[in-house]
Amino acid sequence: MVKNNSVQQVLAAAQKRLEAAGSDEPEANAQWLLAYALGVSRTWVLANGGEDVPAEKYEVFLRMLARKEEGAPLSHIVGTQPFCGLDIRVTPDVLTPRPETEELVALAASAFDRRGKYEFLDMCTGSGCIAVALAHQFPNAVVLAADKSEAALKVAQENVHAYRLENRIQLLQSDIWENVMGTFDLIISNPPYIPTADLAGLTREVQHEPRLALDGGEDGYAVTRPLCAAADGYLKPGGLLALELCKGQPWPLARGLAEIGWKAEVKKDIFNIERFVLARKD
Figure (cartoon, one colour):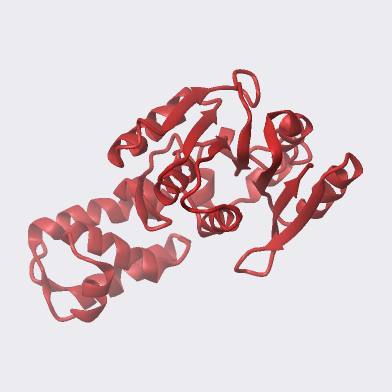
C-alpha cells in the first residue's frame, strides 16, 4: 500500500490519470475529489501541498478517482452539488445543477420582492434545486415542484427535507401540465432541451446524466412547446414565465411567444450565450 503521499504528489498523479482518460477539467476534478476524501475544503488542498495524505484517505480517493476516469460526474461521486449557496443532493436519477441554472434563478428572483407572499411553480424540478433555492430566498413563498420522474422526485424530497421546507414546497408527479392545478406568480423551468440527434455528441460526464432530463425531442422543443402553449392559463395576471434553453433556441421561442401576445425577452448567460427567455402575458 502506498503511504505518505503528499497532497501535491497525489494531485499531480491524479491529474495525469484524468487527462489520459479524457476527463473534463482534470486539475479541478482531482482537487475536488481529494478535498472530499480528506474532508477538507478545496482551498485547504490548494494551500497545503506538502501535507501527507493518510493511507486510508488515499484509498478512498483512489476509488473515487477510478469512477471519475470512467466518466462519472463529480456530483454523482460525492453525492452533492453546490447551487445558489446550498448543497444539493444529486444522484444518477437527476440532472446535476449547473451555474447557468443559478443564473436563471437569479434572473427570476430579481423580479419579485423577497418579503412577498407568492406561489411559484418549478416545472421539471429534477433534484428540486430551483424549488429549494426559491423557497430559501423567499421565506413567505410556497412552491409547487413538478416532474414526470418518480425517481427524480425522491431525490427532490431529500433536498426539501434537508432544508426543512416540507411546509412550503409541494412535490407533484406530473407529465408537464397533466396534474397541475392552480395559478402562479412565477413558472420557472429548466426543461429537457437537447435535440435527440445531439445527445451522442455530449461529453462522457453529461451522458451519465438521465436521458429524460436531457432529451428535448427532434428539435429540442418537445417539452418546452407544450409547456409554453398552456402556461398563460396557469399564470396570475402579470405573472412571469422564466425558461433556460440551449444555444439557438431562445429567440425562436421568444418570437413565437410574441406572436401569441406575450412580451418576451432573451437574456445571455455568463458565457455570453443567449440562454434564457423571460416572458409575461398581461
